[in-house]
Length: 113
Image 1 (cartoon, rainbow, N blue to C red):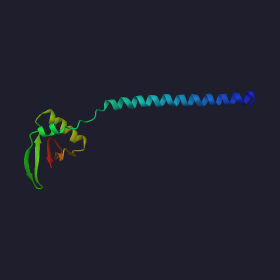
Image 2 (tube, rainbow, N blue to C red):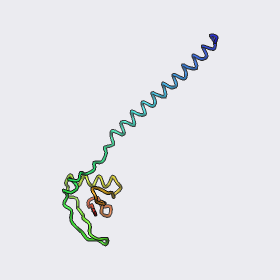
Image 3 (tube, rainbow, N blue to C red):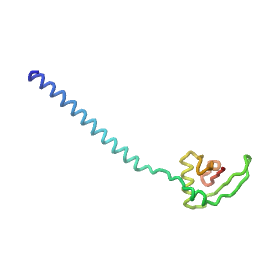
Image 4 (cartoon, rainbow, N blue to C red):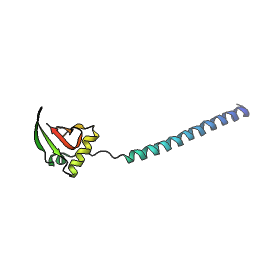
C-alpha cells in the first residue's frame, strides 16, 4: 500500500470514527432524556392485603347477586385502592376479588369474590 492509499484509508477511518462518535453522543443524550421521563413517572402502588381488607365494605345486592361496596372515606387506603383501580382501566383482580369503579364513579368502588 502506497502513501496515497494510506492517506485515503486514514481519512475514511477518521470519518467513520467521527460519525460513530457523533451517533454515540446523540444516543447518550437521548437515553439521558428518556431516563428523566422514566424517573418522573411514579408507579402506582398496589394496595397490600391488609390495606385492602381494612376498608369498611358494605354488602349490597344487585341483579347479579351480592357484592361489596365502599364510598370514599378519605382514608389513605381508599386513595391507594382508587388510584390502583384507575390505573388498571377501572377494573382489576386483587387479593382474590374482582374490583371495579362503580359506574366509572371514582368515589365508589365495588368488589366481588
